[in-house]
Image (cartoon, rainbow, N blue to C red):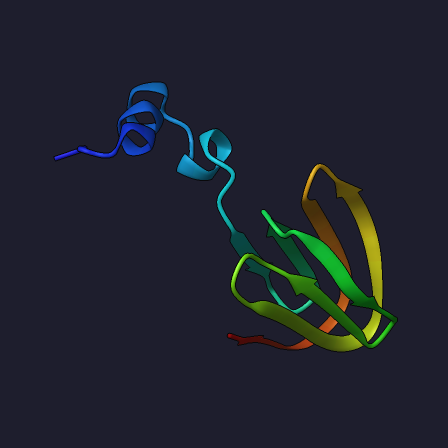
Amino acid sequence: MYGDPVQKSAKILDIPEDAIAKRIRVEIVGFSLIEVSGYDRIIEYSRECVRFQLKNEIITINGEEIVMKSLENGDAILRGKINSVTDEA
């Protein structure tokens, strides 16, 4: 059932898999908060657009009055009016 060691460990410890293995995660809360984990670097940052380089794709967040609330260890928390989130391979 849980053949993957990361899945098995996460299940035993009752924590999300991405807390054990650095995996990419984008979590959107309403239209005003977004968390991005596991990115390689920030390509672009302005109050209207933030672009993250992931391993094999780019995530683009468009909105208004976007502010970086937290930035640490490959995790970013953004606030603002989020209009769209797109990815490109």
